[in-house]
Length: 260
Image 1: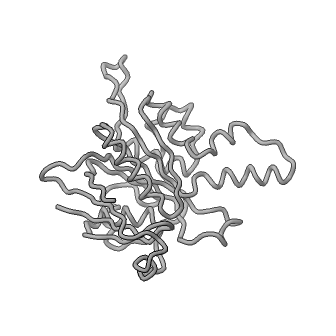
Image 2: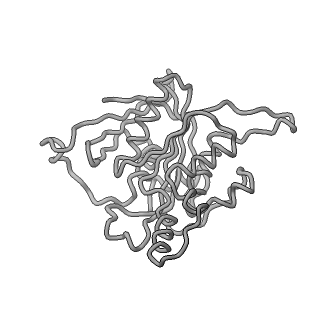
Image 3: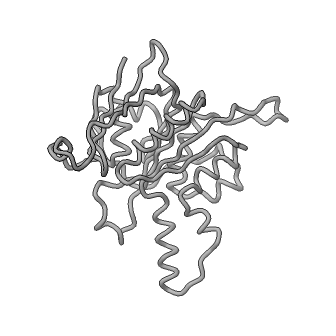
């Protein structure tokens, strides 16, 4: 399987990394972001914005940047074109889910609002409600293959006729109680791509499966200890303009390439 696509716009956010220039400098000498400090989510309506926690801001700040904010018709504006989206997070809002499990263990009542906001598609749902989006939206979690699975879903939407697709990748550190299960560094981050079919003269990205796990080729692939969570390493690869990134996933060995 080989997929090719173009990235027509991008944006990202993490603590201390809020501008394109900051991200470009970071990709030349990457480090693991720390903390939870992010800019205000001013593009979202206040009644919805108050429901958004740190991981929600990490996801939504970049997606508003690449999708744009509609201007109300009362101000002479018009709706932006509807665009399908894929929201991808390996762990989702694990902090909120852990808090509810802790409340259950203590025989305390669970907030229906907290439960509704903890499900994996909640962040994307808030975005679609705010923008009046009625296009297809998917929420993806596929272990350490999450980014690759999200690209597969986005490419399928492009193949099905969509002009562009929003791909949103985000995550946050696991709660301390789950730290023994972590197999990569954790940090708060989010990035978004506006993806389209490759266009002549523009740089193109390629994603392919090199080998299925369980084969000799897959087992012989070298695995270095990661410095970044894989989702953030994909962004680093994209910004750095490197020609290739290999990733040993749970079910396959993936190769990312950049052309042009």
